[in-house]
Length: 107
Length: 123
Image (cartoon, rainbow over all chains, first blue to last red):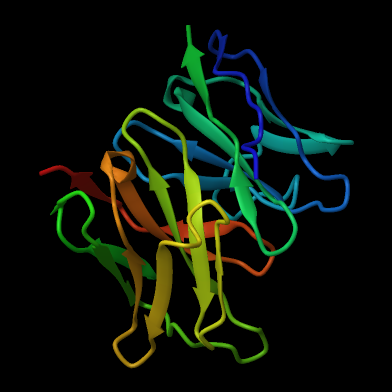
């Protein structure tokens, strides 16, 4: 199974919005999730089922999906948002796949 | 508060077997009242690289593996000990990674993670 495709990097200034894409998804499933990972830390769940936020995740983080591409939008960028972001999706046949990750820089 | 904690050797020799255990606290690993229960998963991350799903196991013993690792991976669960384990055979340097255990929802997302443990494959 191939990894999902994400841009290696993204950037934005404080207060701006940034969108990170994740391509290669199946049209058959909406089990898409997003994770934030700060250096040296474990990943943290940000979004599940394309656009659902777990309790405690700010609404500055939002997700969407169109055809075979999912997107994570971070609004009102803050310094603490500087991290790596990974998408993940169900790939059928009880398999899961991650994207290659996107490093977000807050300028 | 649910917590997951990985444990195991930090150094494994090439061609040998990597074994890790994840201890689960604050949540019964076999809880399934009103719910089919979670899956318990392993994810790894080579230094400076992205995440790779290794596999996951249900407390019933049903397990699913990444096809690329399936021939070398075995997951097991011990509900009495509140832990689940990973065994990876015939390791090489490419298996050097931080290994995370995680809780996987039925809808295929990982809502809880351990802190991770670095395993280096080297002679």
